Image 1 (cartoon, rainbow, N blue to C red):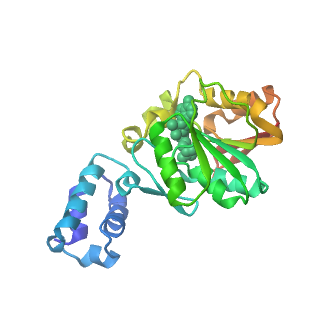
Image 2: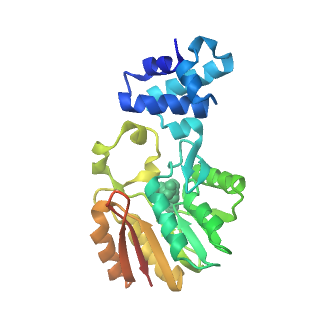
Image 3: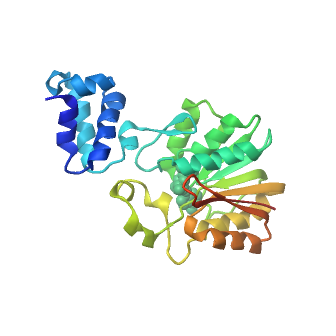
Length: 276
Ligand SMILES: C[S@@+](CC[C@H](N)C(=O)[O-])C[C@H]1O[C@@H](n2cnc3c(N)ncnc32)[C@H](O)[C@@H]1O
């Protein structure tokens, strides 16, 4: 049996036909390190034992809807590959737009804080792209920080990571020119529309906020931002598209100015930025 046929047979009862094609391609190329041609013309029976074990392991995990990025242990973000594992959010394309906006608008030597840093994708990207930037990444999850530190080392960035619970810890007197956050922002009621590969695998801690307080993190960060931002300092948030107006209003109530909502590639309100 050809390799591609084998992969299709093993996965066709759990994945739609249009996904099988790209899964077969990624498994062959990225996991088995074979060419696309091998995927079409190579035989399953000719695979060496180590590749067969890798293939079986990937198929077993995919059948449980584990995201491919966790199986590969890698996810792309802004041109780099970041290590990821269960316990840390897989970086999303919308967040690449947030990082790109900050790079476009920031000046050299900016002092930057990334709250809820996860894999460190935003903090590390900013550190590598803004000359002289001094970047910190905070997260409440030890597991996330371990991965962020590993990414920092492997990508030769220069970010300091700290364990901070932004909702409950007292915040040190520090000053930043930019505070960025992509905090948990999905309400519990939105769970019904989510795919099992997110719901069963990505950490709840990174995703959800209570239905009755969707702005929980934004309000707290806006409040501490009043003390931590430098005079012309700027906040950048990735936001829940359904609460953009409420988030803008909340920032105005805190006295923030020059509030802008930016749409993502899909024309959804996705970023909000404001200055002190
Ligand atoms: C949506 S994820 C964003 C991860 C990463 N910045 C990204 O964009 O891919 C939110 C992050 O906030 C962290 N987090 C959740 N509650 C927190 C808290 N109370 N204090 C600090 N970080 C928190 C989670 O561990 C998670 O890494």
